[in-house]
Image (cartoon, rainbow, N blue to C red; front, side, top):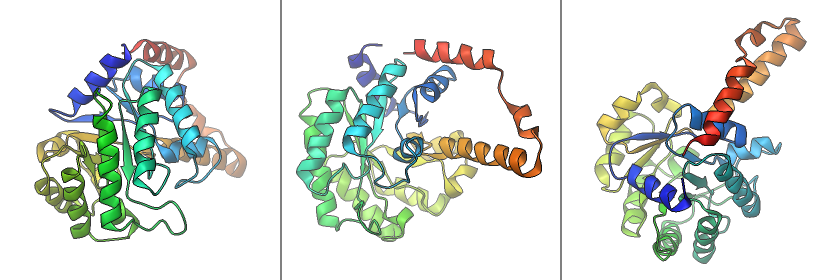
Length: 277
């Protein structure tokens, strides 16, 4: 699939229905996800940081994030969106520059959150947060091609503000031109319903916390347009490493290895994923 087709496909996915966008962390995981039916992929700042032996939240530079995204773009023919934390800078003009660089790299969209990466990761004040989204949205529109600009209100997840403030920010982000809205990990189904009722733009939901108990069908029926996995699949993989090594080095048995997928199956999936798009 040509890049222009990827961008059109990605934008169309957000206009109707509900889809799952998994988050790979390298070429192999991207190809596995593509082979297993993913319609689009997104980077995960945390999962990427884990591959570099670093912690989440500010563990990756913009240049590294762009190079990583380009690597995932080369792995399959699917559209790719970038999880670009706070846009890699506080100033609105930096967010706009990040949008332009992401577009040059071939991405079909990015998400930008309202969290400072320094210190205890507090939220930006609402006025600055909105100006940052307005600048990013304007840069996205100036590209002259589809580019899904997602605005994140992370303060509920991070404990920086309450749900009412999070909803107020999403409404302001929508008015500032964001294509997609995202409030990670609301406390439950009722709070997610309040988010969905408060805005008109498509909403992304993270399959984490209490929302992991809901199915794709249930989230779709509520009006969710996109479901991302963030670093959750990478964390499952790291849990497998932890549990396997605990059994081998602690208990002295290799029972966890019985669940290993056959190499031939993985090889086939990698070939299929490389051809998807």
